[in-house]
Amino acid sequence: MAVIEVHGLRKRYGRRQAVDGIDLTVARGEVFGLLGPNGAGKSTTVEILEGYRPRDGGDVRVLGEDPATAGRGWRARIGVVLQQANDSAGLTVREVVRHVAGFYPAPRDPDAVIDLCGLSDKADAKLRTLSGGQRRRVDVALGIVGDPELLFLDEPTTGFDPQARRQFWSLIRSLAAEGTTIVLTSHYLDEVEALAGRLVVLAGGRIVAEGTPATIGGRTEESTVSWRDADGTHQVSVADPTALLAGLTARNDPQLTDLRVQRRSLEDVYLDLIGEAR
Ligand SMILES: Nc1ncnc2c1ncn2[C@@H]1O[C@H](COP(=O)(O)OP(=O)(O)OP(=O)(O)O)[C@@H](O)[C@H]1O
Image (cartoon, rainbow, N blue to C red; front, side, top):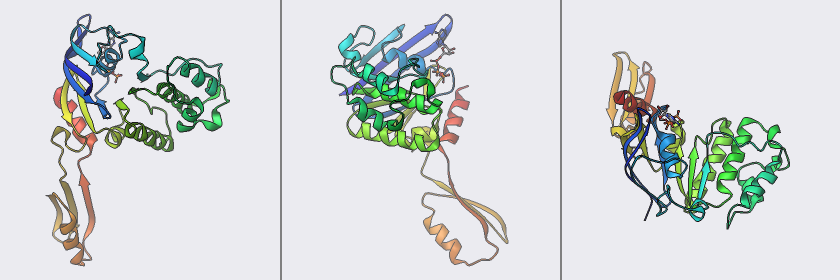
């Protein structure tokens, strides 16, 4: 059963058509990526799905209900990590996580969540004393403490150091493995590539591409092999570079230099897609 089903979603602010006819389906247990440049309509779409913003048109079903009319029971099944940090600066990490856990009928153990989010040694620290990345981890802890079936993550790792991002990725993978459906909005393409099974690219309120990180926008598995030798510079595109590399190295050519194997990155494909959409 689809956890999210959207047909023809529209939202206008004054004269600006922020969301211009979007169709989406997200299945249970998927990590679904939402990419797009600033102003593409990502937050508007996500806020409509979360029930925080009214829509102008289209059909929306989230966990089987219309977010515009769904009640508290529905909301308790959804976790949200918003872009802005929370503002309970005078409370400790443990206090705020326990407090928020109290809003949910069947929360996770707050101390286990603090641990999962890498905050054990900060559990008794007041929020105002935390670094930006640590505050962001608290936001993530608050998003998952209710043990949601569906989790919305809006730019979750902004301000994280590289190690914290990797820890966060494994947390997301374990939540997904437990069956949590996750909608991830991120400007970090490596993050989307590492986590999302499927993604869409939004631009100007429309979906300009949809697929898996490996195939979106016509991205192929093909690699470009380039090298230099006595004859000059060479460049060849191949599906599997193994045989070509073996042949080149078997030559034992002392003049062979600058041997490189490259694959088009998701970032290259993404930049082309949003460039075309402009
Ligand atoms: N409350 C609002 N009132 C008027 N216009 C708005 C409002 N919220 C968003 N917009 C406009 O709607 C468009 C889509 O905005 P939205 O915030 O959904 O984009 P986004 O893809 O989330 O961008 P970002 O990556 O910067 O967060 C933008 O042009 C924005 O200026």
